[in-house]
Length: 114
Image 1 (cartoon, rainbow, N blue to C red):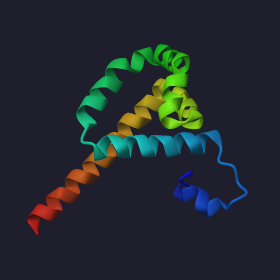
Image 2: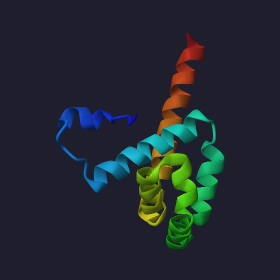
Image 3: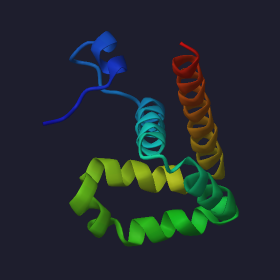
Image 4: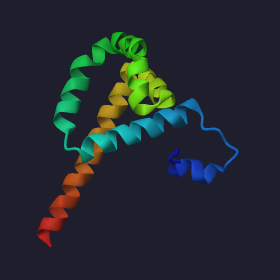
């Protein structure tokens, strides 16, 4: 069963999301998954350290895609390969992880005050 994003509900059933929309949705899902698991610091450290090698990592991901497709499906594996091939996309992922983590910390702070 395919889980539809909030954006696809607004566009209607006949609209196929663009590559930019798919990339944004993947960034959002990946960053929320990382923050929900409490892995912000190691993920950001890994991403920052490997950002200069983005093209090489992207190609390695494409080479091992059958393995990743087994876990996430072909469509998601393709999107991940595209994401990790671009230093700009990696930077967007880092920024989104930091934003979600900051929001989570603020919510925890408000909960403690009450």
